[in-house]
Image (cartoon, rainbow, N blue to C red; front, side):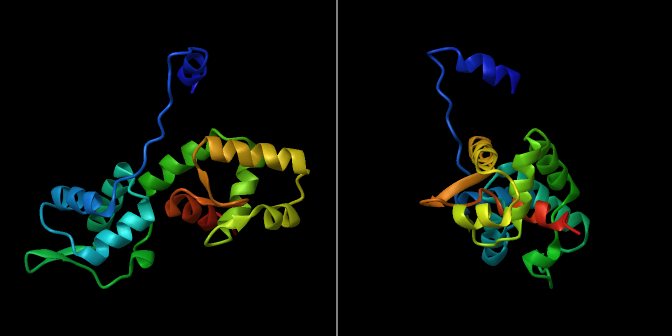
Length: 174
């Protein structure tokens, strides 16, 4: 973070936002990590849950194997659980928590509220159900967008860049 602040002062620096891997690339990574072909349905579910983030992809697969939720059977991987029932590995949750801890308190409250709204949320909805003053809420939204925790999916409509971030926040609610 400190390095980014210093680099922003330089005129020759360009920040490039990296996108996650495409589903086919996630499948290739899973096949490599798992040392055998991963079923297409599992590849699709992991790609959707992780947003193609290679760290999340690896951690999710290793977690499923370590927990016995994904087992080798007849030369391939098998599970009787849906991806939602498999759970998020603690290493991924911790990485997400550390990332969120760098954000302000108002931003984290906004994200927590947003985590209860699957499929994204509109600015009007957020403003209506939070007690934050509008300028502080706008600053928090800008902070979440700049940190690439949220993305704008339509005009004034936002969603989490990774479902795992939303799940981590939502699971922390009492």
